[in-house]
Image 1 (cartoon, rainbow, N blue to C red):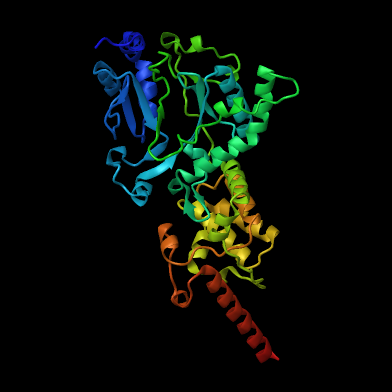
Image 2: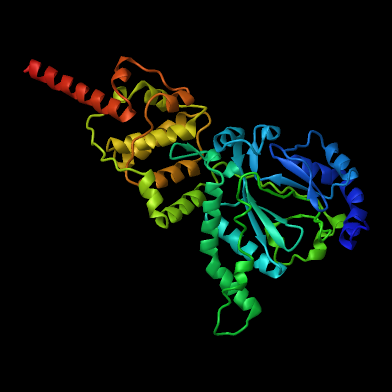
Length: 424
């Protein structure tokens, strides 16, 4: 059967284009810890798959591969993936995920407007390091790396919260940018100065389908079968004046798609998105959270904390984010006022090697203050996981660091009273 014109066009340039060492390196470097799959014009290759060497890319091209796709999820070993795995098994394999925002429309100008609005919104939430690339057709991919997100929220590993968390963030972005998108597209199309165009923006909203387990997206510098254009990386200031001809394969200049994000840079975005989601999903919030009435402790000594908390307060190198969650919830549960709580957290963080970024601490404190106090995790497994479970004889009597602290503090104060009376 005679290949179609589109297929003939892309096959003319695949070997020449992918023979470039810089293109192979860009694709290979981005593939680390990702599931990949080559596409052979109309159909995908086997899954799961990975690149072992940079040269694997060109070998697949010689076998007919026209483009390369990869996961937004990061895996310990992508080759262990299978459609038969349960969510729990996938969570054990997954080491993280990138937030990948897919903007696409039949009009490139709509996509350009949407991309610029979303980038401004991300910057407003404190995210300065953002990756942008042309999709290869008429849209853009925006990436916020896994490194930028907190690794633990509410005692849950955020790596396990896929696709829930990136879906919530994407929905939040859609909600917070849609009005400006309507205004901007209305100004572009101007169907009537008295009527805003509500329908056109629907064509360009970020793709929630992409935010699903093992969904693949086009890799940076991969070709696109329908357009024969390259998925080139752009600087954010290049979007406005971008034209399709800028993505012609042989003109492609390699840039890094993955930005050099700061640890915890996207914490504020995540917290704001979760707050918005919970405000609009009250039933789920009621199921998950429970109230705890804090007890105000007086004359509190560090010696009244359980051994695990004392170990944490001496500073850590591993498990710092999970320990921050423990300390905030413990201190609030025993009625510690805000100034003392923040001072103790600040003193603790100075002992960590290395200390947590200030942005991570501020984000977790902000998250905590917006909610009613809740108990820290119960004893054993959680504390064993960060290597601080060092039970003493008193630990046998309690199930939670709050109980330990209250009882120890009560007994210590009672002993003081007895000694005072004896002196009298």
